[in-house]
Length: 256
Image 1 (cartoon, rainbow, N blue to C red):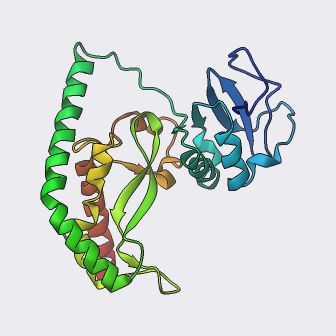
Image 2: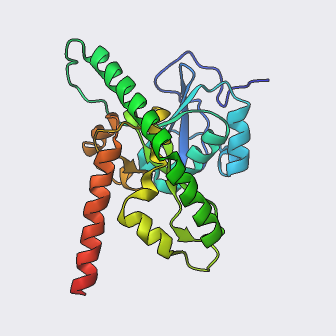
Protein backbone atom coordinates (compact mmCIF):
# COMPACT_ATOMS: atom_id res chain seq x y z
CA UNK A 1 0.00 0.00 0.00
CA UNK A 2 1.40 3.36 -1.07
CA UNK A 3 1.22 6.33 1.26
CA UNK A 4 2.36 9.92 1.12
CA UNK A 5 5.31 11.13 3.17
CA UNK A 6 3.45 14.42 3.53
CA UNK A 7 -0.16 15.39 4.12
CA UNK A 8 -2.17 15.77 0.95
CA UNK A 9 -1.66 19.17 -0.64
CA UNK A 10 -2.95 20.79 -3.79
CA UNK A 11 0.38 20.95 -5.63
CA UNK A 12 1.26 24.26 -3.96
CA UNK A 13 4.78 25.62 -4.21
CA UNK A 14 4.99 26.38 -0.49
CA UNK A 15 3.58 24.08 2.19
CA UNK A 16 3.55 25.40 5.73
CA UNK A 17 1.87 22.16 6.95
CA UNK A 18 4.79 20.09 5.67
CA UNK A 19 6.68 17.80 8.00
CA UNK A 20 10.39 18.03 8.65
CA UNK A 21 13.17 16.35 10.53
CA UNK A 22 15.71 18.23 12.58
CA UNK A 23 17.66 19.17 9.45
CA UNK A 24 15.24 19.54 6.53
CA UNK A 25 11.84 20.70 5.36
CA UNK A 26 9.74 18.54 3.04
CA UNK A 27 7.45 19.87 0.35
CA UNK A 28 5.20 17.94 -1.98
CA UNK A 29 4.76 19.06 -5.59
CA UNK A 30 3.20 16.94 -8.36
CA UNK A 31 4.45 13.58 -7.07
CA UNK A 32 7.86 15.12 -6.41
CA UNK A 33 9.31 15.36 -2.93
CA UNK A 34 11.40 18.50 -2.37
CA UNK A 35 13.93 18.25 0.44
CA UNK A 36 15.12 21.68 1.60
CA UNK A 37 16.95 23.21 4.56
CA UNK A 38 14.76 24.23 7.49
CA UNK A 39 12.99 27.56 6.98
CA UNK A 40 11.48 30.01 9.41
CA UNK A 41 8.15 28.14 9.72
CA UNK A 42 7.93 25.82 12.73
CA UNK A 43 7.08 22.29 11.64
CA UNK A 44 6.59 18.92 13.34
CA UNK A 45 9.55 16.63 13.91
CA UNK A 46 9.74 13.40 11.87
CA UNK A 47 12.36 11.07 13.41
CA UNK A 48 11.79 8.54 10.60
CA UNK A 49 13.88 10.75 8.29
CA UNK A 50 17.01 10.66 10.44
CA UNK A 51 18.24 7.11 9.74
CA UNK A 52 18.87 5.19 6.53
CA UNK A 53 16.58 2.22 7.26
CA UNK A 54 13.57 4.26 8.34
CA UNK A 55 14.00 6.73 5.46
CA UNK A 56 14.28 3.88 2.96
CA UNK A 57 11.11 2.29 4.29
CA UNK A 58 9.26 5.61 4.10
CA UNK A 59 10.26 6.10 0.46
CA UNK A 60 9.46 2.50 -0.49
CA UNK A 61 5.90 2.78 0.83
CA UNK A 62 5.22 6.29 -0.42
CA UNK A 63 3.71 7.52 -3.67
CA UNK A 64 6.76 9.69 -4.33
CA UNK A 65 7.91 9.40 -7.95
CA UNK A 66 11.02 11.58 -7.74
CA UNK A 67 13.11 13.28 -5.04
CA UNK A 68 14.80 16.67 -5.43
CA UNK A 69 17.22 17.64 -2.68
CA UNK A 70 18.88 20.98 -2.00
CA UNK A 71 22.71 20.70 -2.07
CA UNK A 72 22.84 23.20 0.81
CA UNK A 73 21.99 20.30 3.12
CA UNK A 74 25.58 19.12 2.70
CA UNK A 75 27.29 15.96 1.48
CA UNK A 76 26.38 13.77 4.48
CA UNK A 77 22.62 14.37 4.32
CA UNK A 78 22.48 14.27 0.52
CA UNK A 79 24.26 10.89 0.58
CA UNK A 80 21.81 9.63 3.20
CA UNK A 81 18.87 10.50 0.96
CA UNK A 82 20.65 9.24 -2.17
CA UNK A 83 21.38 5.84 -0.62
CA UNK A 84 17.83 5.49 0.67
CA UNK A 85 16.25 6.64 -2.61
CA UNK A 86 18.49 4.31 -4.61
CA UNK A 87 17.46 1.32 -2.50
CA UNK A 88 13.80 2.35 -2.77
CA UNK A 89 14.15 2.67 -6.59
CA UNK A 90 13.29 6.38 -6.53
CA UNK A 91 15.32 8.72 -8.80
CA UNK A 92 16.96 11.57 -6.92
CA UNK A 93 18.20 14.92 -8.25
CA UNK A 94 20.12 17.84 -6.82
CA UNK A 95 17.91 20.92 -6.89
CA UNK A 96 19.87 23.33 -9.10
CA UNK A 97 19.06 26.36 -11.21
CA UNK A 98 18.23 25.76 -14.86
CA UNK A 99 20.31 27.32 -17.61
CA UNK A 100 18.38 30.03 -19.46
CA UNK A 101 19.63 29.27 -22.94
CA UNK A 102 17.28 29.27 -25.89
CA UNK A 103 17.22 25.78 -27.43
CA UNK A 104 18.56 25.68 -30.96
CA UNK A 105 16.35 24.38 -33.78
CA UNK A 106 16.53 20.59 -34.06
CA UNK A 107 18.64 20.49 -30.87
CA UNK A 108 16.53 17.68 -29.39
CA UNK A 109 16.90 15.59 -32.54
CA UNK A 110 20.67 16.16 -32.71
CA UNK A 111 21.04 15.40 -29.00
CA UNK A 112 19.08 12.16 -29.41
CA UNK A 113 21.19 11.12 -32.38
CA UNK A 114 24.39 11.91 -30.46
CA UNK A 115 23.28 9.79 -27.54
CA UNK A 116 22.26 6.94 -29.80
CA UNK A 117 25.63 7.04 -31.55
CA UNK A 118 27.57 7.14 -28.27
CA UNK A 119 25.45 4.30 -26.89
CA UNK A 120 26.26 2.19 -29.96
CA UNK A 121 29.98 3.00 -29.76
CA UNK A 122 30.09 2.25 -26.02
CA UNK A 123 28.35 -1.09 -26.61
CA UNK A 124 30.84 -2.10 -29.31
CA UNK A 125 33.86 -0.97 -27.26
CA UNK A 126 32.57 -2.77 -24.17
CA UNK A 127 32.20 -5.96 -26.21
CA UNK A 128 35.76 -5.56 -27.54
CA UNK A 129 37.39 -4.92 -24.16
CA UNK A 130 35.31 -7.47 -22.23
CA UNK A 131 38.10 -10.13 -22.42
CA UNK A 132 40.55 -7.62 -20.93
CA UNK A 133 38.06 -6.63 -18.23
CA UNK A 134 37.47 -10.30 -17.39
CA UNK A 135 41.23 -10.87 -17.13
CA UNK A 136 41.67 -7.81 -14.88
CA UNK A 137 38.79 -8.93 -12.69
CA UNK A 138 40.31 -12.38 -12.28
CA UNK A 139 43.76 -11.02 -11.38
CA UNK A 140 42.21 -8.47 -8.98
CA UNK A 141 40.23 -11.17 -7.20
CA UNK A 142 43.39 -13.23 -6.70
CA UNK A 143 45.58 -10.26 -5.81
CA UNK A 144 43.38 -8.23 -3.45
CA UNK A 145 40.55 -10.63 -2.54
CA UNK A 146 38.27 -7.60 -2.29
CA UNK A 147 35.15 -6.38 -4.12
CA UNK A 148 35.94 -5.87 -7.80
CA UNK A 149 34.15 -2.55 -8.22
CA UNK A 150 33.81 0.68 -6.33
CA UNK A 151 30.69 2.78 -6.77
CA UNK A 152 30.61 6.45 -5.82
CA UNK A 153 27.91 9.08 -6.11
CA UNK A 154 28.35 11.45 -9.05
CA UNK A 155 26.09 14.09 -10.59
CA UNK A 156 24.65 13.58 -14.05
CA UNK A 157 22.38 15.52 -16.39
CA UNK A 158 20.01 18.02 -14.74
CA UNK A 159 21.54 17.16 -11.38
CA UNK A 160 20.53 13.51 -11.32
CA UNK A 161 22.61 11.47 -8.87
CA UNK A 162 24.01 8.14 -10.05
CA UNK A 163 26.63 5.60 -9.00
CA UNK A 164 29.72 5.79 -11.20
CA UNK A 165 31.43 2.40 -11.61
CA UNK A 166 35.19 1.85 -11.49
CA UNK A 167 37.48 -1.08 -10.89
CA UNK A 168 38.65 -1.04 -7.29
CA UNK A 169 42.34 -0.15 -7.05
CA UNK A 170 42.76 -0.31 -3.27
CA UNK A 171 43.01 -3.16 -0.80
CA UNK A 172 40.27 -3.20 1.83
CA UNK A 173 41.90 -5.95 3.88
CA UNK A 174 44.30 -3.51 5.50
CA UNK A 175 43.28 -1.08 8.24
CA UNK A 176 44.13 1.86 6.00
CA UNK A 177 43.19 1.49 2.34
CA UNK A 178 46.25 1.62 0.11
CA UNK A 179 46.49 1.42 -3.65
CA UNK A 180 47.77 -1.98 -4.75
CA UNK A 181 50.57 -2.48 -7.29
CA UNK A 182 47.98 -3.70 -9.80
CA UNK A 183 45.84 -0.68 -8.96
CA UNK A 184 48.73 1.70 -9.64
CA UNK A 185 49.32 0.08 -13.01
CA UNK A 186 45.61 0.24 -13.91
CA UNK A 187 45.40 3.93 -12.92
CA UNK A 188 48.49 4.72 -15.00
CA UNK A 189 46.78 3.51 -18.17
CA UNK A 190 43.22 4.42 -17.18
CA UNK A 191 42.07 0.79 -17.13
CA UNK A 192 40.25 1.29 -13.83
CA UNK A 193 37.78 3.50 -15.73
CA UNK A 194 36.68 0.86 -18.25
CA UNK A 195 33.49 -0.05 -16.30
CA UNK A 196 32.26 3.50 -16.91
CA UNK A 197 31.17 2.25 -20.32
CA UNK A 198 28.27 0.69 -18.43
CA UNK A 199 27.29 4.17 -17.20
CA UNK A 200 27.23 5.34 -20.83
CA UNK A 201 25.05 2.42 -21.90
CA UNK A 202 22.66 3.18 -19.03
CA UNK A 203 22.39 6.81 -20.22
CA UNK A 204 23.99 8.33 -17.13
CA UNK A 205 27.02 9.66 -19.04
CA UNK A 206 28.15 10.27 -22.60
CA UNK A 207 31.46 9.48 -24.25
CA UNK A 208 32.13 13.17 -24.83
CA UNK A 209 30.98 16.01 -22.65
CA UNK A 210 31.78 18.13 -19.65
CA UNK A 211 33.38 17.03 -16.43
CA UNK A 212 31.44 14.59 -14.27
CA UNK A 213 31.38 16.05 -10.76
CA UNK A 214 31.55 13.96 -7.62
CA UNK A 215 28.78 14.58 -5.11
CA UNK A 216 31.41 15.84 -2.68
CA UNK A 217 32.58 18.54 -5.11
CA UNK A 218 29.12 19.36 -6.48
CA UNK A 219 27.63 20.39 -3.13
CA UNK A 220 30.54 22.81 -2.65
CA UNK A 221 29.94 24.65 -5.92
CA UNK A 222 28.39 28.11 -5.86
CA UNK A 223 24.76 28.33 -7.06
CA UNK A 224 26.01 29.96 -10.28
CA UNK A 225 28.57 27.20 -10.91
CA UNK A 226 26.01 24.49 -10.13
CA UNK A 227 24.15 25.38 -13.33
CA UNK A 228 26.79 23.45 -15.30
CA UNK A 229 25.42 20.31 -13.63
CA UNK A 230 22.50 20.54 -16.07
CA UNK A 231 24.75 19.18 -18.83
CA UNK A 232 25.28 15.50 -19.60
CA UNK A 233 28.80 14.65 -18.36
CA UNK A 234 31.22 12.73 -20.56
CA UNK A 235 33.83 10.07 -19.89
CA UNK A 236 36.53 11.91 -21.84
CA UNK A 237 36.00 15.18 -19.96
CA UNK A 238 36.24 13.38 -16.62
CA UNK A 239 39.37 11.45 -17.64
CA UNK A 240 41.09 14.71 -18.66
CA UNK A 241 40.35 16.22 -15.23
CA UNK A 242 41.54 13.02 -13.55
CA UNK A 243 44.80 13.09 -15.53
CA UNK A 244 45.40 16.75 -14.64
CA UNK A 245 44.82 16.06 -10.94
CA UNK A 246 47.16 13.06 -11.11
CA UNK A 247 49.90 15.20 -12.68
CA UNK A 248 49.47 17.88 -10.01
CA UNK A 249 49.78 15.29 -7.24
CA UNK A 250 52.87 13.85 -8.95
CA UNK A 251 54.52 17.29 -9.16
CA UNK A 252 53.65 18.01 -5.54
CA UNK A 253 55.29 14.77 -4.43
CA UNK A 254 58.46 15.67 -6.38
CA UNK A 255 58.74 19.20 -4.95
CA UNK A 256 57.99 18.22 -1.35
